[in-house]
Length: 226
Length: 226
DNA sequence: CCGGCTATGTGACCCAGGTTACATACGCGC
DNA sequence: GCGCGTATGTAACCTGGGTCACATAGCCGG
Image (tube, rainbow over all chains, first blue to last red; front, side):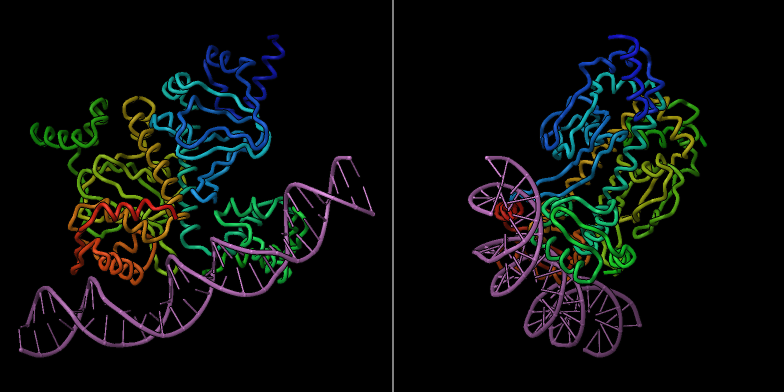
C-alpha cells in the first residue's frame, strides 16, 4: 500500500470520524488495511437478529436501517445509521456481549470499515475522544428510541406519516411499501392515508414519488394533539 | 462522621455498586458525604421531562419508573430502575448534555446518592470498572428499549398484559390503573382483559390484588403469534 | 353503621387501522 | 406497441382498543 493510498483512506475515515484522528498509530494502521474496507450491496443484510457481532462498524458511505421484524412479515424501523454514525446496537452487543436484538439492512450500497472488538475495547479505555464519541452516540440513540416509543404509543399513523414525509427532501422517491415498513404498518393503509393527503391538496402522488405541496398544513397535521 | 459511619455508608454503596470499589479515595469520600444521601418519598418526581440533570444517580433503595406522558394524560412506562442499576437516561443527558426526555417517578420510597457531573466525567475516563459498568447499563437499556418497541408495535394488549402479570410475584398487588399506565393503555381496557382472564380461569381478582392461577396457559397466551 | 372515597365492573358506541381481494396503471424490455 | 412485473387504488369488512357514562363494591374514619 502506497503512502498516498494510506493517506486517502485516512482522509476518508477522518472526514466521517474526526474522533479517530487521535487514534494510536498502530491501531490506525490496522484499521486502514485495504482488506478492512467492506462493501455491501443495497438490500444486503449486515447483521441478523440473534447473531453475534464481530466488531464496531464505521460507516463510510450509504445508509443502514435497523429494523425489528414481526412474525407475520411486518417490519418496524428502529433507526437509521448514516455515515459518521454507528450502528450503536453493535456496540451495545459488543459491550453487553449479548447477540443482536434486531436486523441491519443496507438501504443503499454501503461502504464500511470494521473495528475489531479488541481494538474497540482498548480505544474506549485509552482514547478519550473516541470514548466521548461512542458515549455521545449512545446518548443520542437512547433519546431517539424513547422518542420513538412515545410516537408509536401515542400518535396516530397519519401524524407519523406526515412527519415522516416532512423529514425527507421533496420529491420523495419511495414506495408506499417502504414507508409502511418504516412506520410499522402495511402498504394499504399508507396508500389510503396518502390518498387522503392528496385529496386535501397536501401532496401530489406519482409512481414511487410523493411531492409535498403544503408543508405548512402537513406540519399542522403532524403536530396536532391526537 | 465516624469511621464506622463511613464504613457503613461504603458498604451500602458497594453492595449495590461493586464497580465503585475501585474508586479513587478522594471521589469516594466526597460521594459518601452524609448530605449526599437523598431520600424521596414514594410517588415523588425525581426528574421531569425537559429539565436539565445534575448528576448520575446511584440508587440504593426503592424503585424508579421512567415514563413518557401523553398530552391526554395517558402514560407509558419506558423502563424501571432497580437498586444497583441507574437511570441511564440521566447519563444519556449528562453525556449528550441534552435535557431529560422523559419523567422519573419514585414508585416506592427511594434512597439514592447523586454522583456530581464532574466526578462522573472523570470516573468515566479514569476508572475502567466504572466505565465498563456504565457501558453495560447503556447496552442493556438499549436492548430493552428496542424490545419494548417491538412489543408495543406488534403485540396485542392481552399478550402484553399476560406477560406483565407473569413477570410479577403472585399475588400481584396493584391497581388496574397502574397496570394500564405501565402498558400505555387505560383502566377500562385492562379491567376488561383481566375479567376475561378471570373468566378463563387464568387469574383470580380482588381489590388491588390479582392471583395467578394458571401460569402455563397465561404464558401460552403471551407467546401466541399475533 | 353511615357517608364518602377509591377501585372495579360493564355496556353502548366509535374509530383507527388491519385484512382480503381485486382492479388498474405505469414503465420497461423486447 | 405488447406483455409482464411492480406499484398503486380502493372497497367491503372486521377487530382491537379507546371513550363515555354509569353502576357497584370494598374500605375506612368518624
